[in-house]
Image (cartoon, rainbow over all chains, first blue to last red; front, side):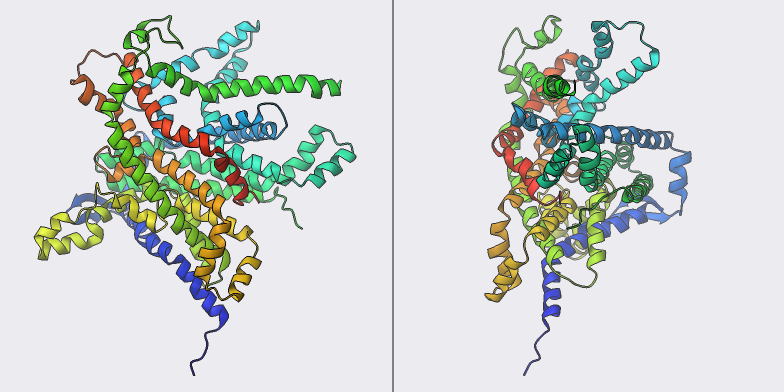
Length: 297
Length: 312
C-alpha cells in the first residue's frame, strides 16, 4: 500500500502550486533582469548581435556618474530634498482632508469623489501635461502660468497685507506653487487614511465622549495612535511614489542615458538611486517603529 | 465660545477649504473642456479665459485624427482589459498562496514581492527589452539553424510584451496587487476553507468555488486599479513599443504627432500658446474613458480599498 502523504506536506505543495505562475514570471521577468542590470552597471556596454556585449570595467561607471556626469549628483540631491519636504506636507494634508471627509456634512460624497479623482489621473501622461512637466515641448510651462503667477501676491493684496516680511511671502509662495502637486499626489493617501479612520471602533469614540474629551484631545490621544500603522504605510507609499515616478529628474536622467545607448552608466545611476531609496525607507521604518501603536484584541 | 467655534465657524471654514481644494483638482479638467472646444483665435484673445468666444468641434476632430483615435482607443482597451484580467487572476492566485499556505522559503519569496514593489521599472527595463528582442535567447539559435525563423523571433511591438508579464503576475505594479490580495485573503475567515475541505474540495476547487465568490469586490477593485495603471502607463509601453500603440503613448508624443499629421511641417505657423488647445483636446480624449469608468464605478475604487484589508 502506498504511504499517504502527510497533510502538512500536501498543503505545502499546494502552496507552491498556487505560486507557480508567479515563480516562473518572477524568474524570467524580475530576478533575471535585476541581476542582469546589476551586471550591466559594472560594464561598458554596446548592443550587439543576440544581446548586450561589453567588458567588465569594475566600479568605473559608479565613479563616472558622480565625477564626470554634470547632472546626476545635482538631480539626486534635488530629488532627495524635494522628497524630504514634500512628503511631510502630503502626509499632513491628506490626514487633514481625510479627517474632514470623515465628518458629516452636506455634499460629502461629492467632495470625496473629487478628492479621489487624482487617483485615476495622476499616474499618467495627462498629469505631466497639466502640471507643466512635459519636457522638450515648451508647451508645459504655458499651462501652469495661469495657476502659478502671483496668486499669493494678489491674495495678500486682497486681504490688505502689503508690507509683509519677505520670508513669509516666500514661504507662502512656495506652498501655493506646490499646492497643485500636493493635492494631486494625495489621492491614495487620503483613501488609506479615510479607511483607517473608519476602522476606529465606535466604542472608543463613545468612551472618549463620555469622559468629556474635546475634539482636539480626541485627535491626539485617540485618532493618531489608532491610525499610526497606516501612517507608516502612507509614508512609505508616498516616498516610493515620488521616488519611482517617471517624472522625477533622476529617472529622466536615467532614461536620457538609455536613449544615448549608455546602458552601463544608466544601470549604475538607477542602482545607486535605488540603494539610497532603500536606505531611506529602512531608516523611516526604524524610526517609526517606536511610535506605532498596534491594537491588540 | 468653544461651542460657537465648532458649530458655526468650523463648518464655514471647512466649506471654504473644501471648495478651494476642489477647484484646484477640477481646474485642469475644466480648463481642458474650455480649451478643447475653442478656436486658435481665442487663445490670442486676452479677454477669453474660461468661456470660448467661438465654439468649435474642429479641434477635437483634428486631434482625434492625429491620435488615430478610434483605432488607438480600441487597441488600448483590448490591451488594458486583457492584461488586467490576466494580472488579477495571476496575482489573486499568488496572494492566496501567500495568505493561506505554509511552506519552506515563504519569507524569502515574500521579500521578493516587497522588492517588486520597491524596484523601479527603469532598473529592469533594458534587460527585459533584450529578453523580448531576442526572444529569451532563442533568436541566436534560430538564426544559426533556421534563419527564416530567426527573423521572426522578435517580440518588440508585439502585445505579448505586455501579456506575458501580466499572465505571470509580473505586470505593472503587480507586487502591490499581490500584497493587496494577500492582505484581503488573510482577512477572510479560515472556517470557509475548513468547511470546503471537509466537503472534499481540493485547494484549487476551494479557491474557485468558495474564495472567488466571496472576494468579488476585492477582485473588482484590483481590476479597476489595474486598468487605470495600464491606461496611464507610458514608461513600460514606450520601452517595448516603437509605435504609438496606446493612448498614453499617443498623448506623450502628441506634439510630434501633431506636427506630422496636422501641420504637415515643423515650421508651420503655430505658436506654442495656440498648440495648447490641441494638447488639451488630447488630454480630454484620453481621460474621458477613465472619467466615465470612475463616474459609474466610483464606489468600488473607494470602498474596495477600505474592504480589501489594506487598512486593518
